[in-house]
Length: 275
Ligand code: HEC
Ligand SMILES: [Cu+2]
View 1 (cartoon, rainbow, N blue to C red):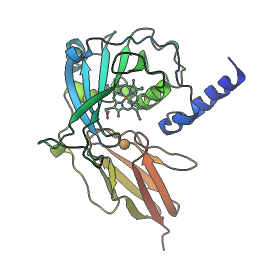
View 2 (view 1 turned 180 degrees about the horizontal axis):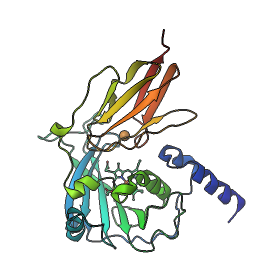
View 3 (view 1 turned 45 degrees about the horizontal axis):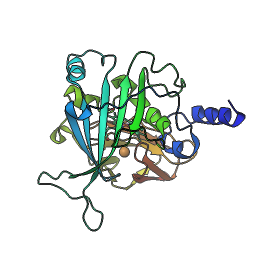
């Protein structure tokens, strides 16, 4: 290993789960990749779909029936399990705004990428401990089934790492069939509450007194994570749909924050000194 590679690994470990910082610094491929293209992915069971306003994509999620049966029976994800994310460009209007169908959902355009995660005994052995996702490995394929050489695979590990208790599956509740409906999410509208809907924080700017706690509640199908911008880069837990996170702000000042999973989502907490 060259010196510069060693330094980069050290930096990467230091950065912890900072998905945002990954683009510029990290190793693109954290270890020998063992994930083969799942030729028959589209013949599996589609267990969920999601609209992604941030990337203007419509996504479908597939796996095999044995995986769904195991998870619904409360068993671990079986060895060898393959989960596939098919990312399609959303159809857009002349202004680039995604078109919606009668149900208000994005409409499927061309297939852009086939992202795969696979669990197999030994797959985690070569992955650096700081980002290892148990025995899972990740690969991003082009629509014709070739590994995408430009994909940042380290980012896959870092972004899925906070989901360790759900077997590193961001969509575990959908797989399990326990995902809450929109009606089951109780959004609060108190003076120190921020809602997350449609990939946006509302209100975007919230004013609180020093010493107060702010609570964010996620009503989106997609998980989000409040991440303070600046020196300490403090992160909330990842909030799945219906979950909340709280942070206390003691010092006066304007605190900018983003979503750690979707850095285009931005908000500010204005902390006012107590009189
Ligand atoms: C910025 C954070 C982030 C990064 C980076 C990321 N993922 Fe994910 N992944 C998610 C989220 C969030 C979902 C849930 C669905 C959605 O919103 O698209 C997901 C879902 C998935 C799923 C569906 C199964 C599941 O529930 O976990 C697969 C497979 C997957 N990602 C593979 C990959 C691969 C391969 C890479 C790297 C090329 C990658 N991911 C990089 C956040 C990320
Ligand atoms: Cu987000």
